[in-house]
Image (cartoon, rainbow, N blue to C red; front, side, top):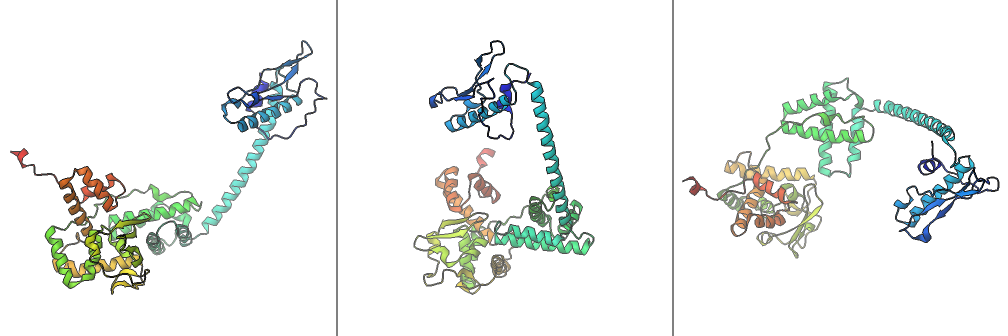
Length: 439
């Protein structure tokens, strides 16, 4: 048996304003709201009376609470009770009675409602299918180049300038490779897992597994944009696994090596030496040094600002050991680059990657060839060297945790775990002599 009370509180349908015309409905009284004079600690409800068939007189029916008293604000309770009141009045006018079995009325109403919902769903589905088919038709007309250029455009202002340039270069190579080796693959919808795998295999065999993984990451990011914008149904590159690679690590210089290099550069290339000292004493990455402009150096507060890897602008203290190495910058244009091939504070119209690569090649030519250093040594090695040196100095008079806490503030590592992993990778933490335990 369908209760009139359940239908009031559980039914969901479009409601219309109803006139409270009770003159033609003498069987019941107008439903009213009891709000306990606004007291939220008491129960609120809707109440009404209905003619008892046995006595022929109006009889107070049980209160309608529903979910009203779960709410803790007056506005919420009034909103729900007004809805219950309106639904109750509508049902009473349609013939529902608290003294009778309303199942037939209920089933007729549900049947009409379900039929209407089915018609709406069918219409909506047809519209979606038509729209999707139309979209698919447009997608098939997009060439690989058009689709990838669209994705790259959407990546603008989302990733850094250097990352975007890297994406573009890798996408261009993929487009050229497909046009040369798979001429029949001319539109983006024809690029499947096999095509991507063949291309990645080509990259691995001609370069390295690490470079292959980098291409996979780049293309996956671009194909994800295509999936997000419904140009592709699925980013199939996510299903292609990465290869295990041996991580490349720059070796740490010994105390004698770095002192010999510094003495050598004082005579041979003072500009390169100053560049290296920013890496060594301020623990910056070479690309971060290459970003620096005159305005980023504040000698009054002894600080510099720089854009760190994958982070917003950061500020670091410039130690006195580096301050005394700097020339007078006060008369230079703040927009000029700090390091250029011709000296401090000059114009240099080339991108960031080229600036970094220039100083790396300059170091290879001036230092590595002179000292016979292999590929495991580079500019980055100076960062490892001086972080190791600083940590081992701090840990002499401090506990390892205290030493790492101080080191975190200097190096800029975001977390202790990240710093500890870095120190392990560069072998900065060495145990004390354990000979006595072996006797």
